[in-house]
Image (cartoon, rainbow, N blue to C red; front, side, top):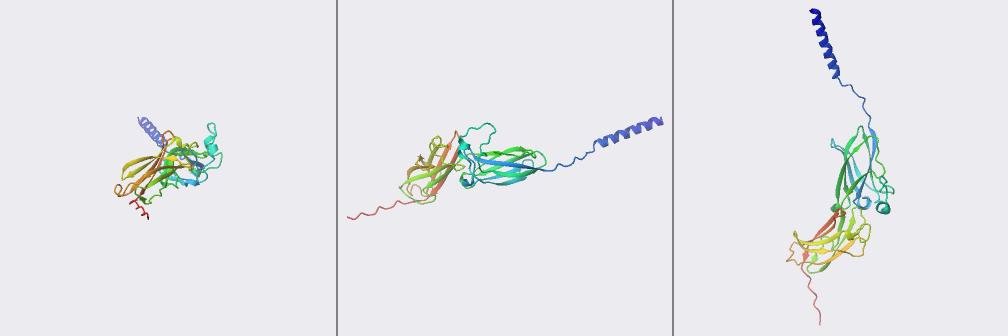
Amino acid sequence: MVWKTLFLLLFVLTVLRIDTQADQIIPIPGIQPVATEVLIRVVAHGAMVLGDEVGGARITITEVATGQVLASGMQLGEAGDQNQIMRTPRMLGEPQYSSKPSGFFRATLYLDRPTLVKISAQGPLAYPAAMQQASKTILLVPGHDLTQDGIILDLNGYIVKIENPPPGQPLIAKDDVKLRASIQTLSGEPVRPHGDWDSRRVHIYGELLIGDQVIERLQLFHIGLQASFEAPFFVPTPKEAPNGITLRVVAADGAGANFGLDQASYPVLPERLKPRTRN
């Protein structure tokens, strides 16, 4: 009977020892971070790279899991080769933007594991009223560099700029004034008839507002300059617009998914008296 008891006790202790050893974590040697190059290009939707001419773009790379910013900076450089980007057929996988010099942002990240990141871009920085944002998530793998075109971030929109009358300039009641505006892609190329960015596909119009109310819509027409469009209008009287007027220009391309606008305010002064004629 004593031997049976001792044998049972020895069996229980052996089982407990095995279970305890099974719960121990055997440390794995640490993996050294690997330098991984990330190449990013911010482009205008259906157009070129955002380069120095439009102020470039601001880019941020953030780790999704922790929210930590891994890299940030500016995209600078050229807009790229228009013939190569817009007119050259290419096979899947062939570079579109990097076969000729064009702007980009490059960062070297030191990764010790596959890392999901969010890449965000904002631009064009030289035109705050036209700035757009875009972002995408991508899994980066240590040691696998991004090359050629890199990660492409697409920004939709137009740069619309009212050129005449100059914003803020007082207008004289009942004067016949020409509203003139320029339309460009976000990468700075002119929108015009029969060009790569054909204005005939874009609805370009102006609006004259008093307060929040649109009192007249103006159809703008191309006037021969590279990206300029124009329409005449009559200035209301101070009685009709005691707080002045607002002019708004809109460019809308639903099929191309690009839209843009600019607007400016103007005080209205009483009409000028005609000088008396001498007999």
